[in-house]
Image (cartoon, rainbow, N blue to C red; front, side, top):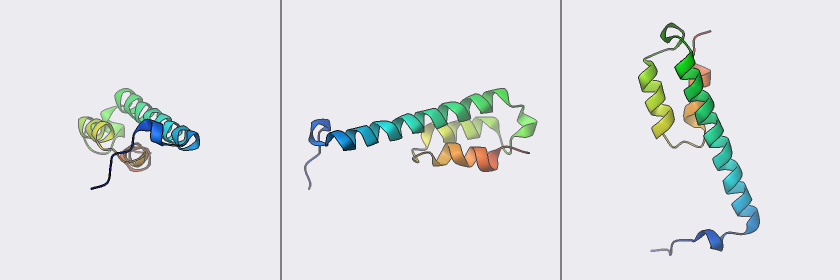
Length: 75
């Protein structure tokens, strides 16, 4: 089994990329959750609570919030 890598094992460039990706992911999740809370249920496809759970729990590198913005909202 491979040894686990520590944060200090990553190069400075890799650390910056990981932090940038984490920041983008957090921003997308926050934007999606704020939109779910503010938007009336009639403008969301499916239950609001289900979209909120998916956005919070699915670790998808931005896929869950983006799928909400693309498919979860009614036009």
